[in-house]
Image (tube, rainbow, N blue to C red; front, side):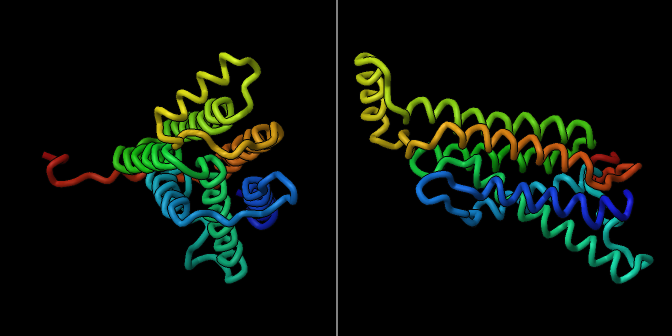
Length: 212
């Protein structure tokens, strides 16, 4: 971890991710704040990063570091939290049953990751799969169900599916560029997570029962 990466590269990358993930394309283009549930998910995600050793907070905040260096560490942590919350908000459907299901999906996966305490490599792999699955659900599956059908049979099937789910599946249509923007934000987020200062030796938390 060089001073340039800590003070400039990481905060700029994380702020860029937060800006891209918070954009809502339309007329006009809006910058949406993260949801309250996404803030809770972001806290769980950062806790999982710390426990797995993918984020070593001691290399960002420590009594042996100068005040300016600790301020840089605070900036990295704050921008990491903001970027995580915005990415999770971006990947969550806006309403209906998909919003409930994806929220439960992300919450259970992050809780399971936090409890399992994987190493850094496994956590990064699991995070990539989780974010990729949420991206596919919102911008491929739900976008296909919410977009205009090309044939009469497709329109009838979509209408029947929407009626069967009491209108809880269809989402507000988004421009095609929104999916590409979301893909770029997720890819940049995963790269930035890999650049975070990590622990060379991971501390494994065990209970008295585990030791027996």
